[in-house]
Image 1 (tube, rainbow, N blue to C red):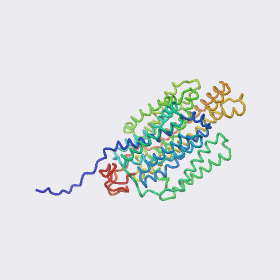
Image 2 (cartoon, rainbow, N blue to C red):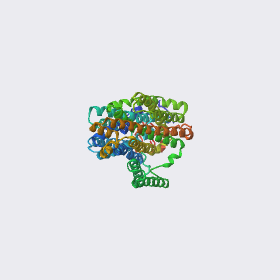
Image 3 (cartoon, helix red, strand yellow):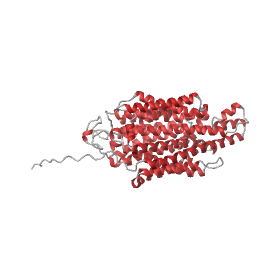
Image 4 (cartoon, rainbow, N blue to C red):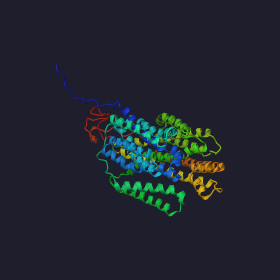
Length: 540
């Protein structure tokens, strides 16, 4: 007897069972990039001493990474969409490892700034691709949780950087903070090649070279002008010229993007109010947090007398608050929606910064430990929820461009935060420092940074100078924290009033007929032919 034919279609393939393992590989890549954003903060006092870096050079050591990161993010997203997201992700990790090797051998501030800029370029290749691969390996019902995991990895790296950097500085030379990147990069590349599928969208727009130059140049000269403002004076022609020129370049970029049918800076994505306000919230969080991270390590080391590893440990209460927020943010969103969670996170963040702004030079570590827990908790609620919500609103074909746009705004916020708050710190510190009894040369050196003032005090045997420098630094730090706290309060109010309350459900599952992968139809999320995690489509 023969079995009668059946017209029933074969069951659609289910999700790939290795998808969460693949997410671990992507999260590891994000973690490496993330903690390197802050690993240098704890090393700044050592760098300032051994490389004789001024406050402005220290700002550029931090900001060169963020500026290049932000400027290259948009074209990186397009490159990944067009030529392959796994390819760009692994190339970015390889470049990150190479530039880390250069950084660990740097013997001058200029060389280190160049290495950090190359690391920023590598980070720009990695970050948007890490988010863009999620729709290709996860069904819609799991995409919020997967996106939250990546956002948590990105957030956890922020306080993890100072701890790792402090440990390495205590036991090795300062270049060791880059050595740790090498094995992590190797593991990340191997895991991505084994576990991730190759997905692409050949219909993605071409790279806009002029737009890339306008964006990179505009951000670079804007940051330069903000950093040089306190040094030269805000009315200095060079400062005014660079800031004005940056505004012209960025305005030209926006106008060019609006005229082009396939812009690199796709501002039409911001027409979705949920995406727009999620991006705004994530950007504002980055702005205020980078200001806090810039001032805290020097406070712990120069004022409280901690070593590098002790500074990293003193930042760990922030990790505790962040982990609690990461554990519960998804459940809170399910109960209340994204807007209350983001608003509450910004409010807690504001409260922590305002408490920190009450710090006195005679205070010990205890008060800081309390508000650092709140800082981490508010950071986790706001940044994790904002990023997950933004990415869930993106259509699959525009995931690379959209995640690149999100991370670009975040990095711009961070770079401007370091520049603005670093300038505020430098101006407040010099204004409060008493150098009336010092020769002109020594007074000029002491005014460069609290580390330089401690060195002058030690060489001259003048303990009153060290005390004045510590008090002046705390004065500048509290001004930064107060300003950041006010910005966070205003941000919470803005999000509460303007952000839509409708929860995004994620893009619909793509159909088989919409495939734009550039891969054979049978290829799926594994390393070879096999069942796909989702119907073949543009896995944007």
